[in-house]
Amino acid sequence: MTTAVVFAYHNVGVRCLTVLLEQGVQVPLVVTHQDNPRETIWFDSVEQLARSRGLAVITPEDANDPAVVARIAALRPDFLFSFYYRNMLGAALLDLPARGAYNMHGSLLPKYRGRVPVNWAVIKGERETGATLHQMVIKPDAGGVIDQQSVPIGPDDTAAEVFGRVTEAAAQVLARALPALVAGTARIAPQDLSLGGYYGGRKPEDGRIDWSRSALEVHNLVRGVAPPYPGAFAQVGSRALRILRTRPEPNRQARSGAPGLYFEAGSFFADCGDGKVLRILDLDEQGKPVDPGAFDKEKIPFA
Image (cartoon, rainbow, N blue to C red; front, side):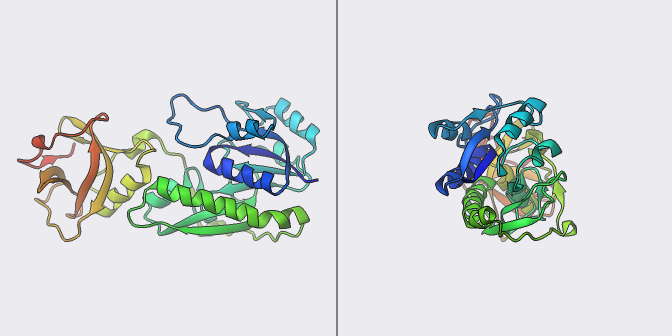
């Protein structure tokens, strides 16, 4: 009987925990997070899944607390898995499992190590990303790779749309790799960290649009933080607007040499810093529709 203690959260946590159970791995303990009441919870619940399967669940503030470590040590698990668990696991935890500790990361490592990798890949204009199962070591996202799978990123895809593909890729990677891990025959490929970079977490205020950037860069930021994430935003005159969906208009001429927002021929448009134009497909003001009448006579500059 193969046993694993699972640290998990979010949709990837739900899908990967399901894969473990489907393949007959015994899970004596699931460690997850309590939902933050200040956060929009748009994703599935690991805790609900675990309790529905009769699994023991804990939600410690600090997974590295000696009491948590002692509880897991007493279980003597073969494996420890982390599936989108948000906190770093220290050496005391990583040293416990007899057959190793493994993490599922939402990028094609070594690219986009660190936080919110799907959002960063979209913001940076990548055309693909993916899911990687790798060994856990003290340095985040730096352990040897067991398996990975790529997914495409379309030019107008939002981070949430890409994340759905990454979630499915994560489940497929784990299902494919698990038999070899259990059998002790899995091949591990060291990472060349020089081929990728580390990215930090993002805050809602990081969605502020810098309209001096190119239209493509603005478009990618809008896609990368679009709902259910907090969204990109801009100050237009005295108004605070969320810019929720855009489309580049490469054949449209800008109104003038300065960035600004205007309404024309039934649509909102924004001139950007490189002189190119974005069509604004969706925007709001404090959750309410924006009246085109305030913009149909002139181009209002961005603050």
